[in-house]
Length: 319
Ligand code: FAD
Image (tube, rainbow, N blue to C red; front, side, top):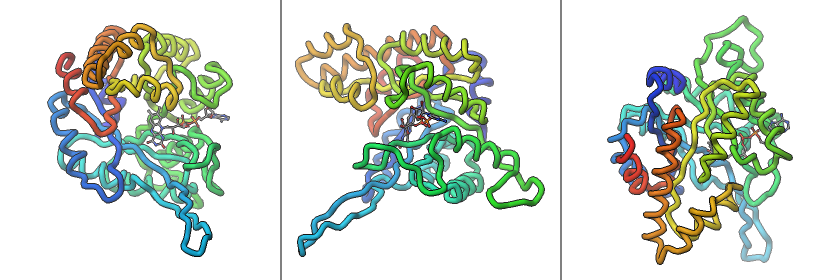
């Protein structure tokens, strides 16, 4: 399997196309997910990211009036989906690996499974708090921040495993991606502090960066320049999501803490219905992509969120 950084090197300055998919809700068929990916293979994505969804805590009233807490995972199957994508499409799958919900030992087991499957790229993330809680809590003996997870993966790449004192064992060979936020992570006091912590992830062994979605390209350009000024030299892959409903004008900034440019807000507000808003989203994102290609973005990474028709329309104008 090829490393993401090698794909970027081999592209020799040409911008690549890639996507992120999310596992279906438990009990649903994988066929819909695969059939959404299929048309996008026209644009030859060298890799496809698969998100990871941690456990949630749900309170269920019982017949006797008591409340029972249920722990469930609504979107399991990340490793299985990666394997399915690799076999069906012959492209590299990049599983997201979280600190949240894992002890260090469970993380090691998870990574060993990936290694045995021939998966050599991972996106290492802290993860959000387990629903419905508002603050992130690591498991006992789990990681609190993504930089610690990066360090664990980098140690395995050196043949250093937990609780093994023998001389270096057979090393893994993971290429490690991490997340970044051109408009700041919502918990960070300011962007400078956030970039300092991003730098720490690189110093601990991360090889490339994927950004949160943004609708204002100037945020990405400023962010890349800021990272370069801080000595962060690894590829910074922009994450993109075309807006597809009028409601997303409110929802996306609230969930992802991002700024919607005034011009775009006006355009979408003047749309009569969601079909028009979706078309406006396609046009805005296509223009974003043109500027990002001009800027020299290594890859355009699209958050599909289970839908591919609008991304197909955008990519067919660019790739
Ligand atoms: P960190 O890098 O650990 O940062 C979290 C916060 O802590 C930041 O505010 C940072 O400034 C601060 N910080 C970092 N290091 C330190 C330190 N050493 N000391 C003190 N403060 C520190 N979530 C999922 O659940 N599943 C997914 O599949 C998933 N995929 C994602 C893909 C991308 C491209 C992105 C951008 C996000 C994704 N997320 C996913 C969401 C992500 O898990 C959340 O945004 C999470 O809140 C932060 O993760 P992180 O890896 O950026 O955390």
